[in-house]
Image (cartoon, rainbow, N blue to C red; front, side):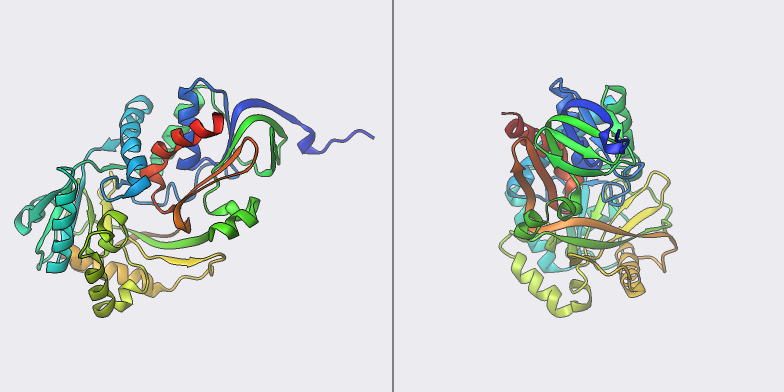
Length: 377
């Protein structure tokens, strides 16, 4: 009997098959094309709808540390080049970190001193000149190397640019089985010279043992889009004292532990929900504000409205405004693990890559070339 099962269909071959069309997967496709490789991208949805479009669009390069800082600085160069080539909007607008307490300012003083001109300490007046803030601002820091993109457009623009350069995309296609030299999908088989699995928080759907050993969980975020209460252009991304607990470059400062202890003691209702109070402005003027963090292998599908209320209250206080008008609400999900990057080779010619620290937009374009150097060696 002749078989007519869909996976008997050949979808051809490629030097590199990338599973996942978020920013991590696309970063590998970008670098592979630069090397002259043929590339196929397999994506289960009809377009990217995950963490790569649900974020702040913030290239937070300067606040990283260790490997993440190296990847981030390489990614910055790649973003600038890619923005020109792909025609996507990128603002070299930097970041302003707002300090509303002396211990927050102390962390920023240490941080700027250690960053050799890549961060500049600001007094309260200079902070207010750059971003709208409420009363009680002690000072802040200016991180001029950071950039912003529109997260709802950037990955789609990159995918379109890649398609114009010969990358074949199979949208709405699930990778059922990955083995050396072959990816079996819901639409057919693809012969693969090498495979990169860039499936974000869904590593456990393909390699559960690997995910368990890495301690991978899903991090669920609450984020909102609100009307700008001031009608003022806000070019930089804006971080707060709570952000100093979230990024390794800040948290590693000598006074960082004391700041964390104070915030956990005085604001447990906010540190307990993992608040990273920050905002960016969209091209239409609305603000993206957030975010909270909750961790589980299988998160509950229900979200308490209290989380949104706390974000809105604190964002209004940071901006020195009245109640904020909500345009949209959403839940983001990304991979989280004790190590900031999950990189593994479960079989010959196959590499699993997941940014397990919420900084995929910041680091992926710098991480991918190093991954491919090893995979193709």
